[in-house]
Length: 297
Image (cartoon, rainbow, N blue to C red):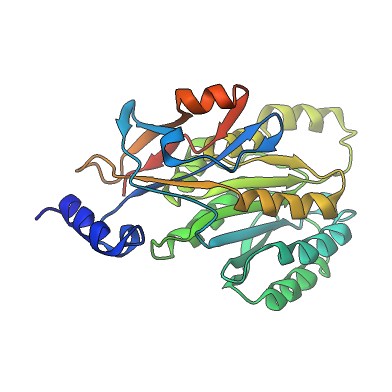
């Protein structure tokens, strides 16, 4: 019996959770549907279609919010964040209460170099203590957002594949030059099955004309990184409320799983997730946020 038939035999005997117990590699896509500014939460599997390199794929497993969440919180501790970090500290610690008991959080801090400050844990008090310790440090130095995202992707890749969803929440003012090729960063995020989200806080205005030009030419495009991985960028006008809202939105996603083409391990492939004609009629202005590529397992 081949692996695909084994999957279906296990699924019939044990139900949907067999997707994760059977020795079959599936591609996971987390999708969010937004219609007129509101998240749509009443869709079914038949309301979605998935194309892999242009070929339709059957959705083998489907769910909404059931799966536990692994979040990597990435805190920018560069000099430009010095004025905002007190608000970030209070907001992050309060927002942790929106997560479920089975969700896990890891914390990374970064300037020009990224450091894992706390590994994945369900202990909210430990995470809050780590955040407070980071925010109590002196801030300074440059900013390498691409490097921090690659560091986060490596943390996910060190974990065994499971039913747990993977998301990144970057807290930064976005003032960073690109020290790594964008496509290398995206490939790592796609390989790690990670959705990149960013809470963009207000940093100092760049008064130096040359620096402004350099940022426009060589800066990091957070919106593009989020769009390519299926995430969002939210400007933190009210950081306490926006931090909580971002974590809630990260949870309100559909999980779609499909079987990749065989014999293509390590190949980068495109993904298109769309609503069915029926769903599009019900939600004519809907936007689907989902990653646009994956690396075949």
